Length: 98
Image (cartoon, rainbow, N blue to C red; front, top):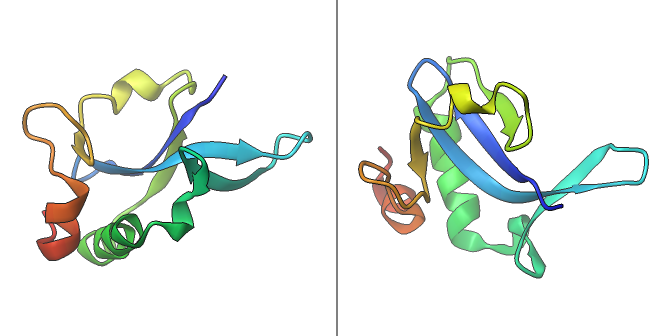
């Protein structure tokens, strides 16, 4: 089962998804993927993550996975790259933030 990953800023109710988590057999998370390539190979996503880090500097950030028991608590947050009303595209966010 593939599990989506999210970098979340609870105080701003904002999150960005770096892709599906990649794990070793031991369970250790070793990276993230989008389709058949590593998320780190996507320049727009990489720029958007750096913008997210700058925008949320000084705030608590947490990594959540879609199979976490408490995921529903953050599921309604504004998502960078999401497809719900109020979300922002990766392209727009990478250009100018939230």
